[in-house]
Amino acid sequence: MENCIFCKIIAGEIPSTKIYEDNELIAILDITQTTKGHTLVIPKAHSRNLLAMESEPAGQLFSKIPGIASQIVKNLGASGMNILQNNEEIAGQTVFHTHVHLIPRYTEDDGFSASFTEHHYDLTAIADEIKGA
Image (cartoon, rainbow, N blue to C red; front, side):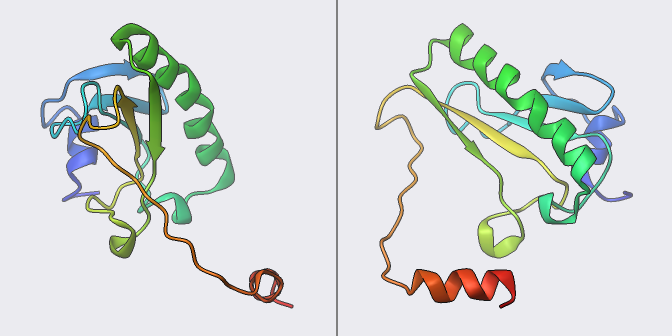
């Protein structure tokens, strides 16, 4: 894709700090480093986001994440890991090329937080809606 920053990184037109590469994907350190070791796992084939991917390339992407994430946790001494994948602007996606954030966690105040708000919905009605019933 012509104006995609990740496609340019994959093509070697823009420098990056790679920690992993194979035929299907690269893993690079995010320039923002939310926490030490914040990594982006990026498929080499361009797709807008996970919602636009076919099952096989998505499976290839997600099959590599446990190994890369485990290596980061082990070698950086992290206590855990947030694995984040945003789809579309409303969900926080800013670069429209599929990518997964691996955010190592060290302490509760290490610079990253995620929280969930409780809502009371009719779960059966939502399930029926999703199934198209």
